[in-house]
Amino acid sequence: MRIAMIGHKRYGSREGGVEVVVTELARRMAALGHEVACYDRSGADVMTGDAADGRERMVDGVRVVPVRTIDKKGLAALSSSYFATLAAIKDRPDVIHYHAEGPCVPLPLAKHAGIRTIATIHGLDWQRAKWGKLASTYIKMGERAAATKADGLIVLSKSAQSYFEGAYGRTATFIPNGIEPKRPRPVNQIKDKWGLDEGSYLLYLGRLVPEKRPELLIEAFKELDTDKSLVIAGGGSDTSEYEASLREAAQGDNRIVFTGFVNGEPLEELYSNCYAYVLPSDVEGMPMSLLEAMAYGCCCVTSDISECADVLAGDGVTFEKGSADSLRSALRDLLADAGRAGALGTAAKAHVEKTYNWDSVVERTLAVYGGEGL
Figure 1: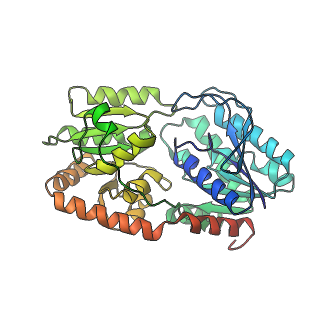
Figure 2 (figure 1 turned 90 degrees about the horizontal axis):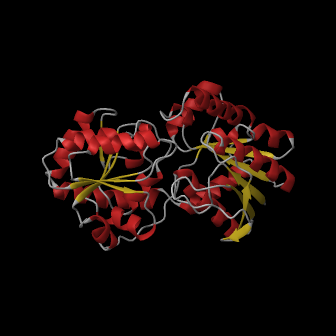
Figure 3 (figure 1 turned 180 degrees about the vertical axis):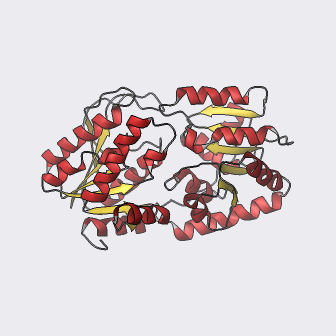
């Protein structure tokens, strides 16, 4: 089968969940003998600042095709998805698989060209606080295109499945993300870079955007009587003013450490050695960072939204969404009971290894490509 993937920023990037999912699906499908092409944005990487060289290449058996991109705030995603669609139509794959709502706006063009289209909705992106009215309207257009035009619709949570049934009368296939088993790393680079030791810090790891509510975590943490640090790991995404506001909110508390975007060994060490991982989001699709934290055996604390609570399945701690008091209370109780934190981390690791498997995700996604389960 000839497969095209559209909607991610950069193949192989770990900038966000979409990039991780596309990379895992593409390389595994290629290994099974399928011809897979990923259409990358051109221009600079949002997190790292690295610029693509604009040349087509083969990576992991996957054809990686940079497409024209207007590298300006608000236009990069819009332009790259259109140009990627035009390039994919020219290549005539059997299936074009769109990822995320905004990139689905040009999906009807592929449909009109007679190419089978699949859309994976990674979350209801128009709800995210970083988008203004115009951007939210555009993203909602992509949602509607996916719901009404795509041959196959995939969602990552049961709540999203219910949403599409209620809003559009569209049946969506629930396929959660997968995760590779993880091997914890001892403290090394994070000690040199940020003075962190095993169990000495709470960890937030994700994009610094309003809907993930890191400011709520900072507010809750500042009133905790603890010698542990709070590590805020991640970079902004079209939200530099918001990131600046987080740093301002943390001023006066030298326990709060901002690392910026992390990858590779420092990332693995941060997961491996935190006392607890905290995700205070108001809006999620299916958070890859939560799955990764569980796979490393972290004790996980999340808001009680179903997209997080369903993944934890009781093997973690939840607090009332949007409540700094509820989050502070949950963290205070956890900090007072290291044995409980360790037990929850062990249970989380066992649960995620049993439940979330990439080979199963690939098999079920290929079935949707072929029209099964629709």
